[in-house]
Length: 338
Image (cartoon, rainbow, N blue to C red; front, side, top):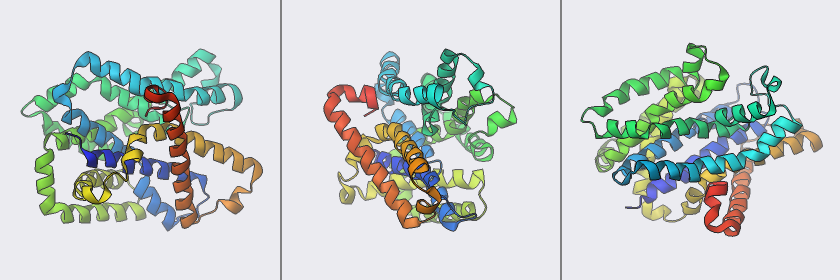
């Protein structure tokens, strides 16, 4: 059964990710309410992607075959990641310095630099996602055992609590890990989200039935977590907001299926490709504006300008991906991710 609302959820999630990164192309006033609002709304929208991935993994698990699963991930996730990484790898090893890497990084050999960038995703802001979710992919058989065990999901609540407390890099900080092990910390943080998605996939019908009764209560909790994070940003407020809205979006997108129809279909289809290229587009805009435009004059805080800018970036990236898909045909998924 094709889950249209989950496909549409992908489109919503990628808009959140682009919106989060587009925020940093603007100069915002200190303690800006507008920045806090959009940062809370869009920041860590990768949680939505991990939730969707876990949901679909469980939902499709009856067809799971170990070898074909890993081959598919290599072709549709790892290969496009490697290909789409080439421009950033060249730029940050030959032309410019990447500020996000640890001190001493550029003392290593060129090959070591490339390998370290690929296994951490530090060559482009959004790219940490792939090394992190690859760790989740690697333990797929274990996750299936949890799903098929009678009491497997009892670990979900403790893991959610740990994720909320630690945050995305909290485990690495607590254990004083090298920054090169950051994907492990992020994978631990997002494992609970992936499992939450699996749980909701397993009990999809029951979830929709329960949410029909309790969606207003969940919406109130989401608004409360949102407001608390806006005025006192804490890891657990933002994490709670994203988890609650993950469940709400599954329900609301299902209920609005007939209204939305195919309006988000293309965005959902290209979501992974859009994830790959939007960092390049935003980076190029940053470089161009810093060289040819007075950034403080033209990119200062302006809510409507920011929203329009984000829309234009999504539209431009979508057009590029449409051209790539038409040009590459069936091979496009292995090159640009869609």
